Length: 319
Image (cartoon, rainbow, N blue to C red; front, side, top):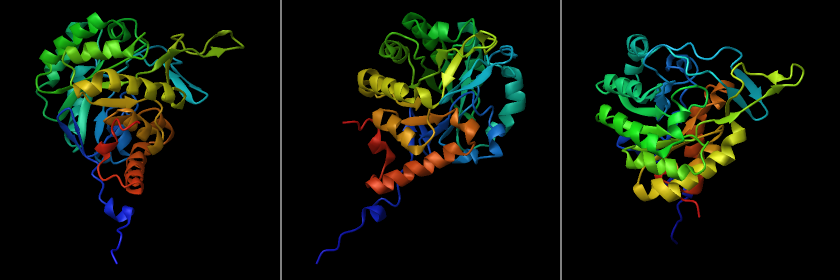
């Protein structure tokens, strides 16, 4: 009588590795830019090396104090932030933050922001020779700055221009372009980035939103508006990832980094099945700093239960 092997045993060794635009990752889970600082802030709560990738908060050429306070507020099923790209600037980042990042085994990506294309290019050129950095995430979708940011990310012509310039400056580094959802057709902006040389796309950034103090009859945030993140945006983000995968990224074989409201392995798997090669955990980290590690194990457990031997088999598997 032929014995049948249990599915769990057959899938006991799940291949969690991912080739993300030429960068070999141990698994498909990143941290999202802006939520974990420069790495050391997270290290007390989580083994950063357990992640597939780590993305720093945005780095600009010069230091930025960011927007005035209050600049963050919790909402039902999410939060609004208007931090305004506060950061130490490129020089201090290299001098003070890179030593820790150089000790990591996980793939490190630096989120790059600026007010002009020349600023983006200058940062990319400085970081292009840094061996510890696997790639750059081009932030052209931040809604909380008056210059740069989202002003680049809503115009396909400007997306082509800035992506082309940074692609040349970044040398061999993997270039991810981060897309804003605040456009009429995200497939159009995704196509522009891919045609200009993006190796990968990350989507989506936050949605512009407002919270009102009904007693003062004023916006809660000093910046008036902020970027909405968290579970409230997840279904929209999954839809936009699937749209870009089906219309642009899948046919072009460009990997997607899906983000927006991911708290659990189930959330992450929705993005992967919809077309994301990898996912990034952001706002949930504020609630549970070890969230990303738990999601990695949850994805592995799901694969075992479903008889999936390679996580890559799930990418774009939506029927």
